[in-house]
Amino acid sequence: MVGASARSGAGATECLCPAWAVTRAPALYAVAMFDERPDIQARLDVEIVAWMTTVNATGQPQTSPVWFLVQDEVIVVYSLGKTPRSRNIAGNPRVCLNLNSTPPGGEIVIIEGKAEIIADGPPADEDADYVAKYEGPMEDLGMTPESFAADYPVRIHVWPTRLRAS
Image (cartoon, rainbow, N blue to C red; front, side, top):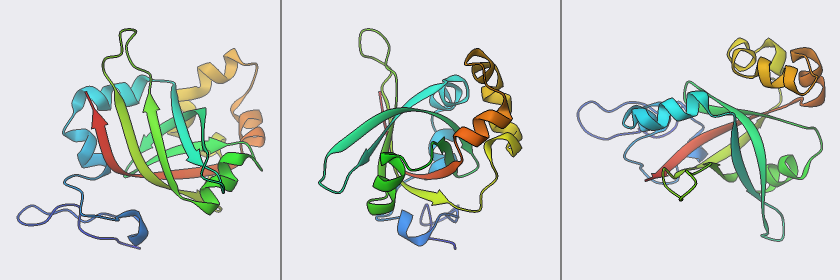
């Protein structure tokens, strides 16, 4: 389903996100958002871990490390099955992804968005870009792409709605 336009006026691009993912008219969206900041795109390409915050049914934020990949207009995350993360997203799709800062607290990257569990998405071992980024870290943990996909079967798409960065 195509949502609202990512930009209005000349040169407007269509947001290919679900309509619910655009709660206001952001100046930029997803790929275009990161294109405006090549330094951030470069970090997203090489950083291994992001910190994903979801919110549980009582309103308590819960943050956990995740592996991620920017793919087209979404950020892809694979999750363990039946985790608080999946339950939280089902109840409240608003999430936040944070990259680590520099030691003195600079180079902050905070990506706000709406998450969706993708029931029919490809498993991690069939996502060539994800495997290309994470095969080495999987091996470091004694895993193969196949064993990772078995342990982390839940595909999550995060539709970025706002970028905050220093």
